[in-house]
Length: 196
Image (tube, rainbow, N blue to C red; front, side):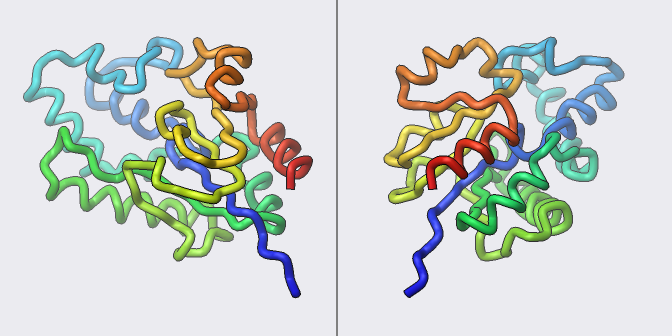
């Protein structure tokens, strides 16, 4: 009897890919912000105080298709593809944004789906999950996310991926929360291979 492969769940934005939102923010505002300019996940809230301008940017992100301007994070493709031989890889990504009208959120589902199927072609469509609440999983062996609140579940190995908004979290702080802070996809692959 074949042994079932362990479940491995990973986030998309700021874990597998990045740059699209920031690129379009700079294009929209005619600025040159970098990730180093921000420490909060919702960085647009810190620079855009006008509600109308804020809403216009959100609509712009959708109409310009953020994922046409998004880049895979270094090492993500090759390492995840190799891991997919040993674990069942699922991508779980948020798609509904309450700050914009629900009719606009629907476009993001398609944009993310297209990005995943075009750029991570080894991921089976049935292994793409759209869910804002990532704490609904039970029994997963590994989960990778850049937000600590998405790792508050019973996943055995909760891996925190470094991103601009969580760089203040040390390995010791992560360990206190039951998280493993790994620096890149090479480290993630090595860790997973040692724990399957």
